[in-house]
Amino acid sequence: MDRIAILKEEITKKLSETAELSELESIRIAYLGKKGSITALLKGMKDLSADERKTFGAEVNKLKAFAAEKIEEKTAELKEKEIEREISAMPQFDITTPVDLSRGSYHPITLVQRQCEAIFKSMGFAVEDYPEVVTDYECFEALNIPKHHPARDMQDTYYLDNGQLLKSHTSAAQNAILRKYSKNLIENGMPIKAIFPGRCFRNEATDACHENTFFQMEGIMVDKDISISNLIFFMKTMLSEVFRKDIKVRLRPGFFPFVEPGFELDISCLICGGDGCPSCKHSGWLELCPCGMIHPNVLREGGIDPDKYTGFAFGLGLTRLAMMKYGIKDIRDLNSGSLKSLSQFTDDE
Ligand code: FA5
Image (cartoon, rainbow, N blue to C red; front, side):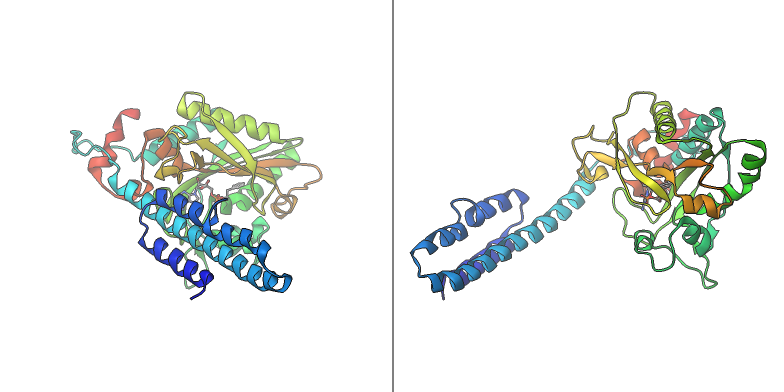
């Protein structure tokens, strides 16, 4: 067997026997590092004839790509396993805390929702309710997401036989709210300021920070000369009120067809203090509140002239906010229905 085939077999065998992430770096160095076996093959090519170099070089490069790909695959596999291990090893709620089950209590999401509603009401926002079953038009088309638009892939949801669907985001109410208040805006000059919390559904795999059923709270503001500064002001005010302390946030570009420009607003993970843990997928940051300036097509669809008015919209992840506020490490606990765990949050009201 030639050297290339031997190395390929060796790498495959070593990777299959490896169960620790820390060992993968040594394997990478042993084969792909400066003094690694594959690098040595490439270095040794100088002694070959031009023709041999061409064929041998191509083979070694294939081996190099093979090794890099296999190491990357194994890294992803072991990382996934490590996250699962950490989640199962994590202490969950302290179920030994004595609770008086006869008293009843509010769900942590209800508590956070009420708090957010109070904050926005104090800033002049109306609170709107909206159905959980909506049409394709409300959930997508009115939001500048035509049929077959790739953005639909990010929000697969549950469809009913009659073509309606369980709303995948609270943005599904935007069009109706814009229409409801547009007359007041145009004829009386009253800005549109509304929030609309609600349950959302997505057909996706669950993990420590993803559920198939979760809560968001949408907010919009439309008037003359509304800008990104207004958006940032309201986001910062809301977060400092909810957490009652300074929270590290970052704003980065984000794509949503219904805003332009669009942003992702992340907060530093309060479970691990930003060091990285399963709740934030080891990034130290948690996507909490995407937002942006409402797209002209969405305003137009809501009966508002985008040449005269501008506005912002945000889609706050209420469930994730509850996790951060109460230090809940696994989102699935919130839908667990365990009274023993959930009733620990009574004292906030
Ligand atoms: C949206 O749903 C957009 N409608 C938000 C938006 C509104 C953008 C207005 C611009 C303007 P996204 O899919 O990223 O975006 O979800 C928004 C937030 O909901 C996320 O940051 C996260 O906090 C929460 N979220 C999304 N999916 C899940 C899930 N499966 N489980 C729990 N929370 C989730």
